[in-house]
Image (cartoon, rainbow, N blue to C red):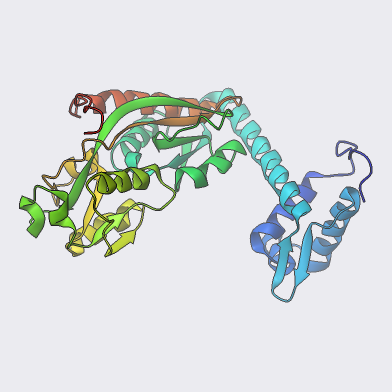
Length: 321
């Protein structure tokens, strides 16, 4: 039982301990962790026991199929990952400050930014600074935020989700983009003008935990309609595009997706209430690395050009419309 605060800065806890514990958690097995770290299994077991002695608690429960973090293990692993991420960021920052031409920026991306803004921004950044490495991680907002907070991701790009309950985050709006109902060119629903006419077709909807899914549910609810029963739930743009081109499916996508792809078409059924700001979500307290700052500059510049390509915001609908 721990009866007093732990002093983890005494020198007993080493960086290798943090790497070892997080690797065991990622691999789910001491043996696989040993292989990943190029160490003998007894050395990994011995290192884990050292950490557990220092902390005074068990970090993993052992089972026939591997190991599972305990409550203490989950807490320690979160901090161990954050420490390693900060050290990586320190290395990137020093390298970036040394010559201004190297470093790594990790961008978490949502659907609304993957088709046009992000590729254009990466292309312009690489033309200016080819030594900067850009790492892209796709996901939903809720799945990307923990990696942003612990430092594994520098920024999140996409539809701005509410952050009122997340004081550790800040947001920078870049442009407003409508959401359109989209199908392949020549789709039989090309002349439909109302939502009920589209219910007999298969749909591609966003995942449950996305803001767009919630907004689409509200659109259907306001018209007294159920969500399409024949549906796939997906947020991967390559998968969505392939499904649209190979079948008579319908999806709600950002306007720039369909307006930059001549194999897709906009269906004449408006979603005027589904229009959100696209922007960047950042940690409030942590300074950006030089590479991340450069990425943000290019995102802002490319977003300014995109604003000229998008239609102006429509007037607000009357309440209850």
